[in-house]
Length: 388
Image (cartoon, rainbow, N blue to C red; front, side, top):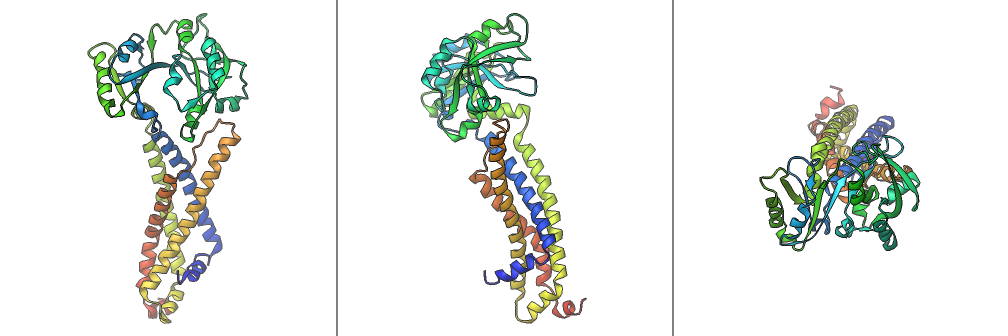
């Protein structure tokens, strides 16, 4: 830009005010980067080639309602269904309620439907042979400093075991790892136990499962397969709702909280405050330079040039602060995940978040600079030099 040096000098005319404003913009976009990364991660659950082949069947009433185990053999017989497995929520805590664990009781063929999750073959065989064996995500292994072969005590606030207590014990026989980065966070926090052992050990589960996972041969006929599955239990006490894995995850999350709405509400409040703050800074900066702007017009700068310089100053300030904020969010997310040993798992700031952030920076810069720029453009030279 021809007049960039003038824009830069004007931006840092009052260094203290500029740095404080930049700090506010950085804080806003740091929060945006972290929250939008979380929103994107939740939105992309199940959005992969393997997930597209999976259907999830749960109770039509609520995902906490169980389904009869006998339904599995009927689902297998449906056209386009090539494999079926089932799972049940166990929950569980370790060393107190503060350490909630994502623990599932699953069928022995569960991982066959999740090729994006890998386990060493020897460990997988050891798990299948050990009734009390458990496969643990590598994030959990790091978080609690567990080792393969270790016996760990867990508690469940939902399911007592056969002796009536809430205390359970499992043997770690293998580690779950993600083959790709997209599912690393979800896989790393997962813990899998045997459904057969779970059913035998608690009086509260008697031939019931939490949900079914089916793999289709032809993704294009998934809707027909889903309708056929639901037709099996139509007008029965355990009617089902079958949908794609992504849709099922989104539905379950919305029953607990609308992540998109929460993130949108927080960021709306943050950016509204940022508009007021940055707009006030730009208005004050232009007001202080009224005589200088009049001099620029006197020596030949057009009104359009003055308008463009003020807008460029506003946009430059927001872009600098916003870029630093998103960059800090990228570093902070990685540092928090690594430093917590997996206890805090913040997703990275992806390309989508960067593009959305840059768009917001330009829009905010234009909005907060519009009124001061128009005022500068309409400035009367005589009145400005006279201090009127």
